[in-house]
Image 1: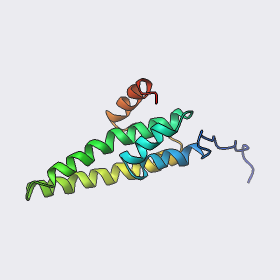
Image 2: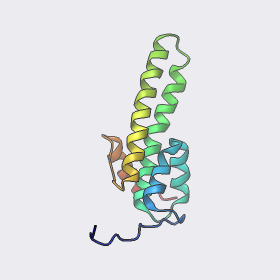
Image 3: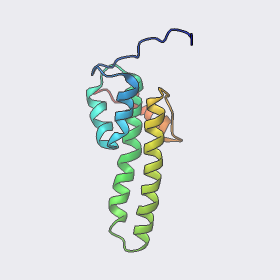
Length: 120
């Protein structure tokens, strides 16, 4: 089937395709988010997803750690936060891999604003 010729996928400063590196920003949550914020120097697409991943998953991780010390109610909250984290994790990776600059509510706008201020 003939179609428009596909352009070569954009490469990042780390030598990966942009969509793959953006997916990796979500892989280990805030850890890979911070790592890619530090390492990626050229791709705003990857840096956006790395910032968004960090802004979402670091507070979630902290909240889960805190609530895990509270009996019963804390366990329920941890379970719900874990479900939220799972859904966000999957959606983030899928959208990044599809090459979409998907903005999660509130966090996406923060990621764009902070990305301009954070230049490592």
